[in-house]
Length: 199
Image (cartoon, rainbow, N blue to C red; front, top):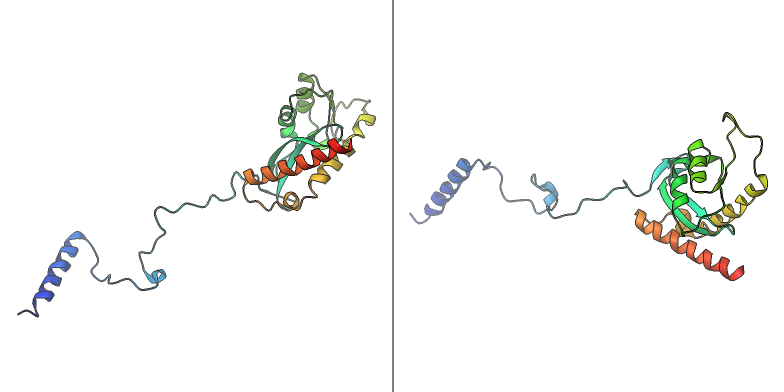
């Protein structure tokens, strides 16, 4: 009689489980939880953030980040913005005019990537002369272009080249935009100190 009581109790438990809707074939879990049918990630676990919103994008050069930089006359970077590598330059021209130190330059020099009527109008609205070459397919191109001023763009390219000498800037070792922005700011600061001491 004593030996039958545990079996009887087990039957009662099975009956309760059956009424509750549980499958009584599910036994003890396997020592390796990967074989368990109900194995799921912890409810409190954080989801991975992914690469959205991290200034990463595909361009012809691969999976990259584009640095839209604003420099002074010596070529030192005084402001920048980050976007994915596939983003165009032209839409960021008004942003570059507004970021950086609170100064109003007399001229804004940019390459053909920033060429558009809207960008030239945005510069003139701020009292800045746009020195941006016109594209070959643009209509009503003016005959005069300030080539002497445009030659100063070489200093800007050299300043960007100095910042890209830092391996963490050139290779983008950071995953998040915030961390990469910090590295670019740090590198630009070091280059700016160098410019100040050598000027």
